[in-house]
Amino acid sequence: MRGITRRGFATATLGAASWLLGAGAGVGHGAPARRSMRGMWLATVANLDWPSRPGLDRATQQRELADLLDTAAERRLNTVFFQARPTADALWPSRYEPWAQYLTGVQGRDPGWDPLDFVVREAHRRDLALHAWFNPYRVANHTDPARLAAGHPARRHPDWVVRYGGKLYYNPGLPEVRRFVQDAMLDAVRRYPLDGVHFDDYFYPYPVAGQAFHDDAAFERYGGDFAGRGDWRRDNIDRLIREMREGIAESGHRVPFGISPFGVWRNSSTDPRGSRTEAGVQAYDDLYADTRRWVREGWIDAIVPQVYWPLGFAAADYAELVPWWARTVAGTEVELHIGEALYKAGRDAQPAAWQDPDELSEHLAFARRHPEVGGHVYFSAKDVVKDPLGALARVVEDHYGGAARR
Image 1 (cartoon, rainbow, N blue to C red):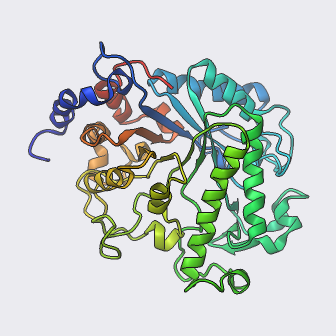
Image 2: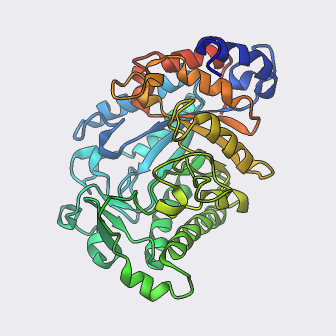
């Protein structure tokens, strides 16, 4: 793979693969357009992408958000994943949870407008699909419930909350928690013309060395039918996924349900069905997310694994993981889109591959070998805007020659 130049590899592969996706994938300018996912994550937690800081006036916040959508359209993307529920709060007037603090600087304070309504309408005006991105169980990026808004569900139900790793989480092992977070998310599904529902990779939290997630009481009460705590925790998350899909169907809104998990289900050294990787985290074992099962059971409509490593990376090679995920979705109706680490491009602390502006373009060229791959999603919006290395510009030049379709 490294025997030819990276630029040459990307360009040479285009001709052979262009018939697979046509102009919708950005190649074959004269071919009939077909839809290919060209997505952008727009994160609101900790003001990562938007708003640029809390407390801005309404006009400034709306202008910033519109500018991000304009940039997505200019980059020939077709889908925006808008983080509408970042920390057990909401960027719409929720019937269940307080306003997100990232708008006004104070959780629960009404910003005087409805960002979710605005972003859906403005995305559609630009012919962009808008998927509402939810984080199911994260409550706060601190451990002090007193800092939450008065009347916050986590303050009214302190038994729902677990402190872990310097953060607060809802306990996935409690059925009442699972019902509540589903209701909170489905509130948006019922009220807005969304084009999709999207979960990120946080289920049980990423492991923190030397710390335990204290769910002993819930396990004692509900875990008796399971061989061990791990099986019980996975069942809790399985129920969340299965029931969320059912809730979306019952809402009367036919919107696809997708999830963007950590890129490694299990290493093959742990499970022969796993990928030939040596990842320090495995979604099945550490996050209790049986992502492979969700695909094979058809509980989701799309999966966007975060394959945030370069081609040739020893512990988790892009060239190993993309084929693994392609095999996983083969024979199912689940769409496969690859999550791409645009944020790593040009960062000094990243390996040499991420200093090469061709790396991401080569990812797309490689993925075209696998017809199961239906597109790519880039993290995150501010990197789509800044693109300091020109990596996304190279992707657009090499792969997105045709107009995007949502």
